[in-house]
Amino acid sequence: MIQTKRRVRSINQVAAFFQERDPDTAITNSAIRKAVKDGSIPSVSIGTRKLIVLEDVAHYFNVTITDD
Image (cartoon, rainbow, N blue to C red; front, side, top):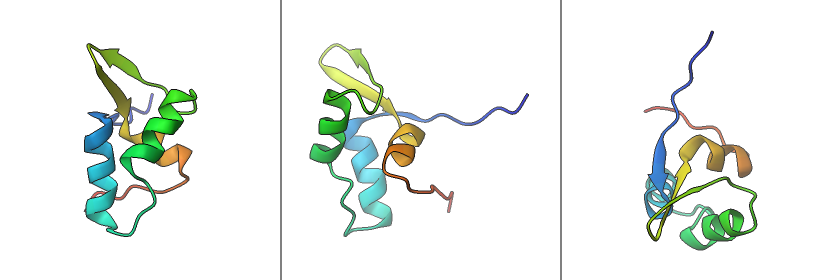
């Protein structure tokens, strides 16, 4: 069985991850929040925070994550 690393982060952390790698990215807090709100990206609520899996966001926006 192949195990894949699933990185659970807040929406702000995920947006910062993509913006750090590409300052001109269209993957913003608001774009991620909209996709979470409409159910396109699964999330878990912890209090008022929404936690999402970084790889789910990459899949939704059709981008490849490389570990630099």
